[in-house]
Image (cartoon, rainbow, N blue to C red; front, side, top):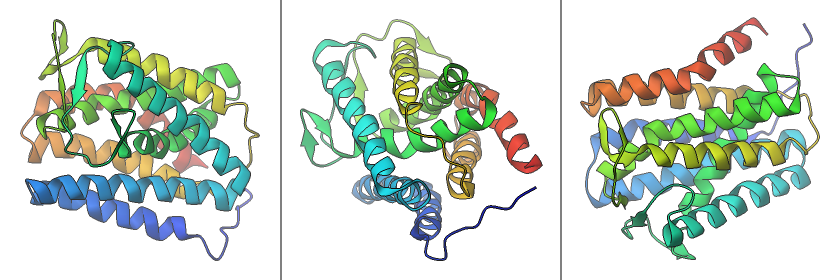
Length: 250
């Protein structure tokens, strides 16, 4: 096995550590401090992903990553809040700070921060671009099985006219997951057009697997919602578990 060298100056390592620390602090605060912590966590995770992409895959590659993911995320969310397509009827409450096109700025940043490791997950588990897009898209959409229940409970957005919901998440419609899957597969599919480059991807791998494990733990223990932990654990675990095995074997 050939070991890939990590650049001596890779700020994404420290940024990933900061992201984890901020996420650990989430259950320990409430109210306005928790809202601020949520924004800071997204900014740290976003910066870690983009910085890693720039260091290991080049600034142009990273810029295209942001353009595709944040751009598509902003368009999808803006259209979604106005038309209910493709996610369902929902509104942001204004608790996440500055907005562009009626969408909090941190929301498209969140699409970028997680799309990057999910892209690499798909590429690690599949050689075909189509299959990699499907796997990476599934990973990204499955993450929302944790994200939406957490953010709705925190009051950052609200769903309207929920008819069919996930077990344990009566305020989140199944249509949201279908919309996420559509947007995620298309987004990761477009990212497949970027050149594949072998690199030291331990930072995005750690962030992806940490997000999975910590989300299951948070809902099972700290948030008192074991059904969400089970649903999300199975959904995201379909990709996270084989990915973890692939990372360990490498």
